[in-house]
Length: 401
Image 1 (cartoon, one colour):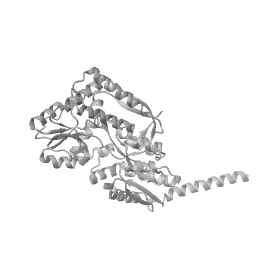
Image 2 (cartoon, rainbow, N blue to C red; image 1 turned 90 degrees about the horizontal axis):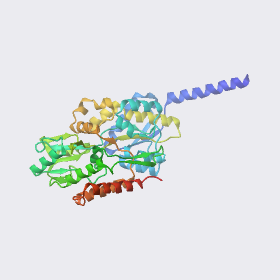
Image 3 (cartoon, rainbow, N blue to C red; image 1 turned 60 degrees about the horizontal axis):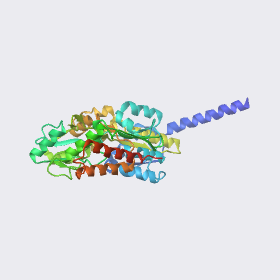
Image 4 (cartoon, rainbow, N blue to C red; image 1 turned 120 degrees about the horizontal axis):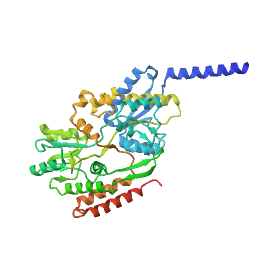
């Protein structure tokens, strides 16, 4: 009887402690890394979070300017010294998981993420069958900016190039980039992806580049480079005499300035009868593993809030970042944004950029450089297929053995 009473009292103590922890929340410090242009915005949103969640009213958030590109590298170098919550791009997910820098998304939050965000962003935060981050944007892709006094038909690459040639204008497309290059290959129906295990290791390559579709894509790039209008590049600010350019939302301001009243944007055109595709990109928030369960709960709650519909709309209004939240994408201001509308149309023909070995990017650059140098101008289909077979064989050597 005494033993039973002791067990009941012990259980009551545990339950009361759990209830106290839930009621009190977390009063310590949470370090957050975000891009410099959203530091002040994030500070304001943390205060809104605290006001909406009294249990976290005494939480201290230290928001530091560390961009998505640097955050992942810093976290991998020293997880313990890194931020508790940090923004990063989807192509860093596997590295961060492998380094033990990401906590899995709490189960209930994961269900909300799946229900409320677009499919591309959900896939981007998921590795294997596990969700590791919270989608924050769905706006890192490329599409067509053009001068509508020059280009009257942006629907086909042939028409865009011809219009630029006729007007003596330049058409920019960065075909020696492994990111932009996929527009041709994926659009034609060729595939190049890498499977990862739950630890982020590259375990399998899936490629059909060495195929009729791959040859068709390679020929389209070769034909493009032969145009007098063609310039290799993807930055409005670095271009000149631009009639049209394949670029992203980050250059919307520069494109508006360059084209003035003739500014226009559209999804990528078709070429040789097929729709150009490519990668879609996403920003996300990750939570570092914690030894303090109360701190982990606070980090999860805060990360979920900072990626919610309301905050994504507010972030768009503040700095123009395109939402991944489905309802936020229907916001009137977001819908009226020409660049985001063009990207949204293009994302229907893209795939999320998954995990690629570092050497892939330099290999793709080499392929594009050879095209630009004219090395393949006279190659027949058999020779182009041979080139792509070599490309595939080299890519397979990059797997984690």
